[in-house]
Image (cartoon, rainbow, N blue to C red; front, side, top):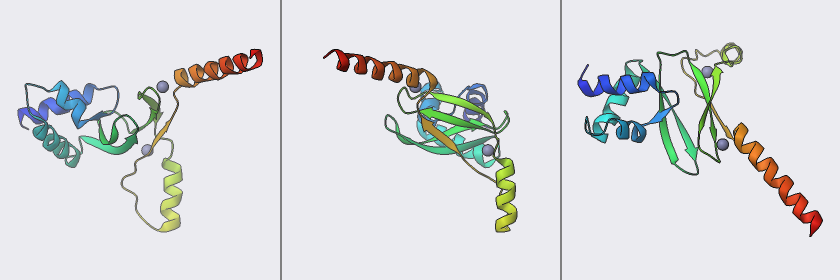
Length: 140
Ligand SMILES: [Zn+2]
Ligand SMILES: [Zn+2]
């Protein structure tokens, strides 16, 4: 494995959230350019060291995010307000996929799922903002 691929894998393995090529490019600055990061990620995914999903968010647009396959397969939540990733834990949709498999007579080898919305902190904050507004409305 080349130095760039090794470095990309290392950063991906120790990351606690999905990373885009741009995120990794920032972390690997000085070590390799962005084109190399893209190529390394493509290589790592092809070799089964990483998996990716495409996410659209209002702040970062449509971007592909990568996670290491060193850790067990899991799913992610993206907050549309503070743009943080929240770990949803180990995959719980395997049984659903199994039944889809037998219904459709197909062999599912890969799936991707992410969820978006408001994280706990943001929904609490918005909740209190709405309550605040309501109070102001009553007074006015
Ligand atoms: Zn949030
Ligand atoms: Zn899954």
